[in-house]
Length: 441
Image (cartoon, rainbow, N blue to C red; front, top):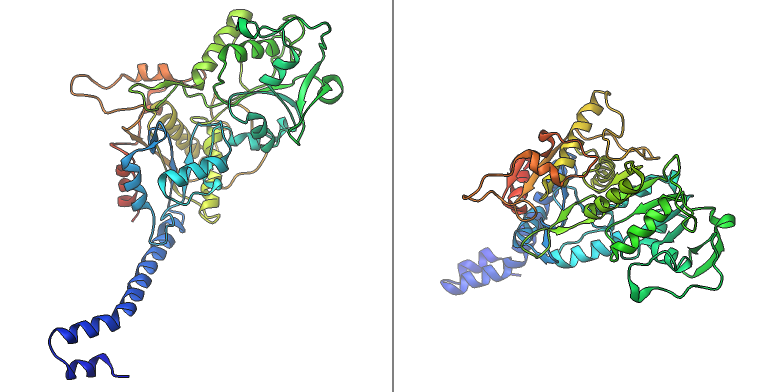
């Protein structure tokens, strides 16, 4: 076969150039691809695989608004991925959503963002419930929307009763909607509850034999019928798990595990929408009005709770091939959720290194996980974007005062101004990714 070099001596002009390019083009493409792969592998080794930095990404208000992708998100992911479509840094999506399974959320995000996202990279508001195994054998009442009974069972809960099933079994409890008022049954079964088996089929079982009484309450998210859920939750709390009886508040309140304390969240409307935190506020107010006491939470899960950040840290470690991540960048749009939680976790990390802080580190949730966690990261930096709940102050008005920002926080959150101050404020998630790349590439 004639070499390109000898051919160039026999030919001249344009024909020579064409022949040489055609013969060398496949080799050139392979060489360029190999070089790009080598650069990507080196970057992953130095950063994504070496454990220097990891990213926790909020979803609503950062990547999406009302189910639509924010344009900056697509540009950000083009910078975060290597030539093979793999993340340069370990990335975990942490959202206070809680009405679907992680598999479904991963599929949704993958389709919208055109990125391969695995369920292991998704942390939902209820995900840390998997760690609270001491509650898994109790008979629990679950509230929320979506397949909350299936979600509870997937987390390890064995005896699950939904508000809808409890309402079916006790039809005289829900009296707000006149169109749904039942006819009085000829005979009530006051000490039974509707328990859903693992097969998904419903069967009536005496709670005295199978479930005893309702022993805990799990609030996954805002329900569709607030009035029904408020009524039945109060019935259960004020009767010590026996809703067919008259109110008699117990000396020790039933444990309440609440997910997603967000007062507000950002959809496609011009202003933020009411979130599960508003429903919790209604429940707390009604409970206090009826009993004179404060509703107590065994744990508050989801951002800004520490258990959620500790659980997300595990996910980052798994995503990083079980190597430690030294610096975590938590990117979000809500000062009282994303910024507060990241700063609280950063404080927790600092004190953990000094061995001077209890594991919970916060009034907002006292339940302890029943599993060991990996060694803590060195630091967590909060990055606030301006595409969601928070927007940059306009020229006509100043930024909100710290004390007014705390009005949107949950009752059990400590009102410390420093916890709501982000490490960085950027325009959007692309700018946040640029920040991480500048610091670690």
